Length: 314
View 1 (spheres, rainbow, N blue to C red):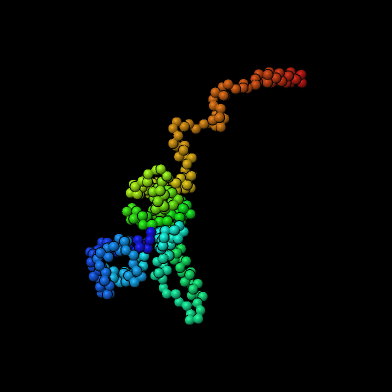
View 2: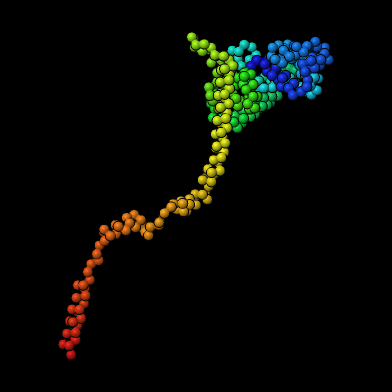
């Protein structure tokens, strides 16, 4: 994405849904002594005309008059992802958030003779906290889309390589742009734009495919990835109550009773021996009790001896 594309996108966004036409914007410019035409305004909105510094500063004033509500320079720089200020050389991308913060930040104050070190440190800390908050919000959007397992290095590369293609697709799918970037990072380890450019440069001898066909194919893959992630999130959410119930103490304590009640035809064994060996084992290994007949004979002999002894005494 270029700065021209970013500004053009925001002009269309601000004007969409209103009855304001290009002629109305050009008419509002005359209040500031600017000779803008409807054709020139239309070309700027389509990203076909670059703005001079004076025109960029005047544009928020003109749009505020035409739309009848305040439009700031920050509104014209609103967006996610990264852009190129010059030639699209790898490693020279700039975060749109950082660009907006720098251009629309409060004036830097310093003492007459030297910098105010404490104030400088406070401003740097505030900028870091603001950037951290923006990064945290992006991660929340990614997590809500169930893409939290994306590789951070791939996500960073995809975000740096994102252009207007990601922004347009995000608007079409009605999702945040960072979600489209995360889906691309999960699929290819780079941005949608980078994947598209790579496919448009096939090996030698292979005819180059049409950009529209490639973009349609990649768009479908991104959409399938988002739908798959959403379905997995819904399934996990549906299983959550069951997992909580299974892990609860009441369920653990009730499990033996439930298992016993749900086992069909279960008969409790009489004792451990029966449960382990069964009744047949008793029949096969039954041992007869020793005979007590010889004990009865000895008892009768002792009684007879006692009787004889009694007669002798008499």
